[in-house]
Image (cartoon, rainbow, N blue to C red):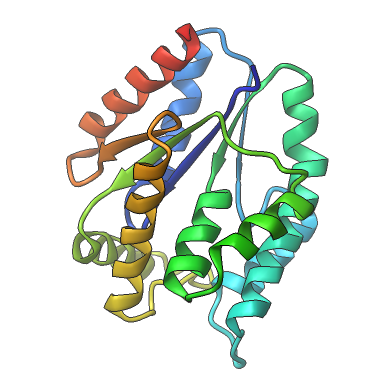
Length: 213
């Protein structure tokens, strides 16, 4: 079985912190793994990430946004993810298809069936084996995210999505929970409102159970 695990959730849910902490844990378990993220993972993906996550002087329409994410994913899957999986490595990815469904589908209102079809074309129909969804109230997540951005004075802030209105983020969260309810065998919902160590213990428990499955 392919060991492709995705970390998902709204802004400020802590998934990026948790995926970085998961690496040392997997090392202690003797797991050969790769950590990666979206949009990113490849030189092309990093360029597209700059366009998508940094607020610029021009607007990006919802269809253009979707296609940019798909282009980054097409390169990422073929250059990074699939080669690692074919080598028998675990791949842990910070965001994947479910983020596109939640943000561009439920958040922007684009057709979910179309997004799934576009994903099948651009990502060779790849789906995660396990998805950890870090869930918390939108207001808490946005406060965390904006505090993080304010503290980071050394880089151009990746805040284009964080600056969307509250209703957008509520639709995204509701979309994630709807996706999880429709696929309970793949999803594990983690209460991300707790302190980092408690969340990490849940992550380790889920990874250990996945290893033993």
